[in-house]
Image (cartoon, rainbow, N blue to C red; front, side, top):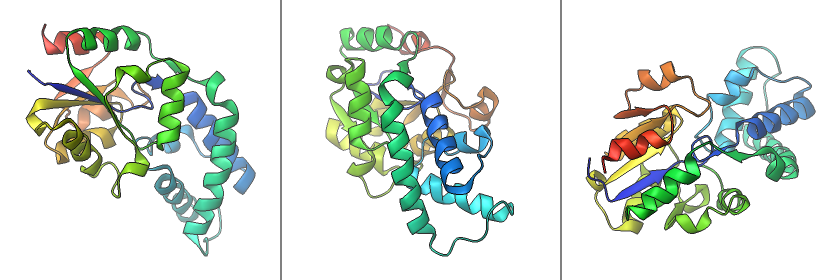
Length: 227
């Protein structure tokens, strides 16, 4: 491999936000519906736009007979999004942590003169807040967040916009992400993908989506790049 640009997902790839996200989902479901879904149901939505995830999970609850049909699904998702973000922001700084080895890998990549970017389905304020908590913001040249695009992962638009910002072609980049939606987006953008198996998605599920590379630890990315 000889990429010039390394793109990363944020949640579940650079920073372990899984406990925070699950806690926010559970709190939202308890407040709105009086019960919580299985964590596995929430995790399946990781890597997609949160508003879309909330709508899809609500539809799943209707289909399972756990709640009555929702008259205005968009309005219900808007309400749930406000509740989710209230809980999420309250617990944010104390409930997240970088994955072991990420900081060292990022600094080594910068030392090797790779250009680094983030492509996330999270809103920009959330990505920047997480980066600032761990003083990682200065390591990244480009951030493409949910509010920067019309179409969201697994659509290729976010990745293609990142390539445009870097002024590189798809073969000059690799995308590192923890979710099946990251793999799908990378494939759609014709960018090589490296699945981060240290995130919340089961390794077997990532394997089934056939990423170009499967990494068990961040330092394996350095070995993959071969310098």
